[in-house]
Length: 203
Image (cartoon, rainbow, N blue to C red; front, side):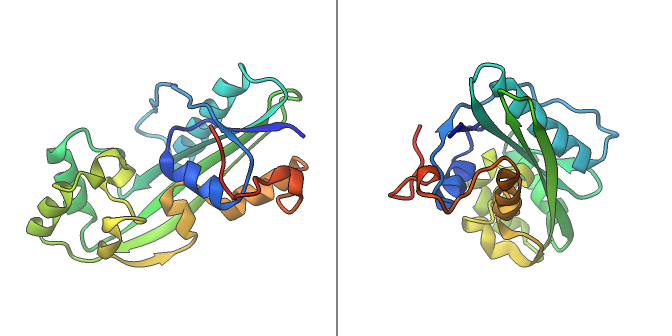
């Protein structure tokens, strides 16, 4: 069986792969995450996911490499805040509105070069958030390493009124879509040789 590699340092993506009970390794890609501002968010997410996967596939023999990238979109792509002031600006923009979370996902076989790239899109409606609440949330530090300046799996969940689509996509990895892609590479999650028996991945 081919080794499975997650080309991401995201603890949330690692946790979701562990939830799938996959045997995998983590080798983060350090590509520069640049993109043209006039591109569609789906294209940006897919392109960055592909670049991450192919970056690690170049140095990994006989492996399936998973790359992923998540963007938040509301009139423009809202990335990870550079500082608390930018986090405040982003969360004020999201307050009381529906935005979209798009995760690009790419899987590549480093031996055959077979590549599958796809994306998942989820609509998220935020409640009206007061500036006082936003500042209190920012003070926890949670928004600072997350696209859109919030974490749905953490304290940021209290601001989410509705979601339409895949919840795990908002966390950072659409696991149902990944399951389908891996099946296309011959990976059967229900076979023992694919699973870590204690349900945890390893680095």
